[in-house]
Length: 245
Length: 245
Figure 1: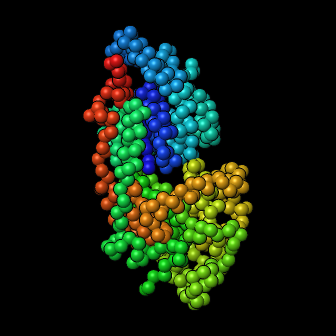
Figure 2: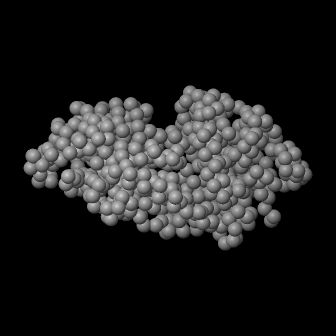
Figure 3: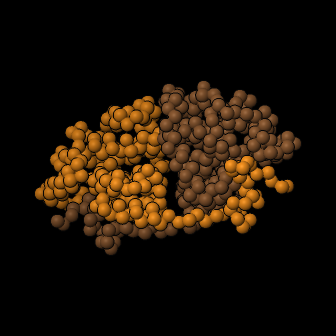
């Protein structure tokens, strides 16, 4: 079974939701048969790389919150994160564009290091004092810590086209699948879970999707049986088919 | 969409079928949205690592073919391969166990190099004079050529447990999905194609599976709407949800 998770590094509910999902997955009996893929979703897609501001300022300017509302929201998120055992700085974080981080995450996926890098990006953004925005050297340190080759990661960052199509494709798919925000979880492209739901909901989703895996429908080009040898030669325990032609 | 292909390196129809599938995929309009995963299927699972013999001898001894039948089968396979533009030595190849190759292929998958290694293994086995069986140094050369770290690949080969569970799990799944031989193609865990079918059958399967992708069913723990914010907080273009609690 495959679970795809759309998220953004700048999305606190994604950070919390990932932990809740992983709690459910950890208790799921078929967890070893579940593959998790992380997909890109920029909350602020047009944002220039050097357009960085404090989160609280962004919340008041962009969403018209009062300073008190913005701080209360952050305090609430801090409490939700703490309940999942996640560190969260409620004051002093920055907000910025995440396109390059998503490009790096796609590169990391191609190298089998995606979740390692995502976890480090989340931790750096939500829990550490040094900003992850506008600092390529910081991203390279995190990429290296995730097990990626530093020079290869540097080349990805330096080339704005590298993995850019993959990021945009993820976002196009999210829209197609009906995601209006993140985190957004898709199980076997059949079930969708929106938001940082309680772990119990993820357990329910995993169980339901697992139980509902359909039997395969054979496609055999009209020969009428998927496992015969009319045009579909196989090798099996008894040797390889020799076509009668 | 995801296509999983069960195959064995020692399986000529897998080698041919992969090329036919790739011909179909190359002409499929949504090819960039298709992820291909290669899965393990040993034709000869109990075979000891040092139990190597010429293919033609194996065909006569194990399957009771006459020498002429075995040679005719290989000639036919050579012709089928040639029709796909694939080199194929019809005489003088070896047969042996492939468990270690499958373990390496799982390691390569974790590093984003699976198809590169599989192509090199096929080419080495079917087209080159030097045997791939019983020769760890040869496997390491191929792993290195596929872009894997040589020492890491050596460590995988040296540890018989490394990725062994993944190989067995693939084989268990193949049985569960009804595969009686390989190659065996599964599209979105919904459609199955058995054997080295003509490219047209793969085109039909890709088209049918693509058109039949179901709309997502929301799972929301009973709140009745997948995109509301009752227990499933999201961040979206308009900011992050602040729970009213």
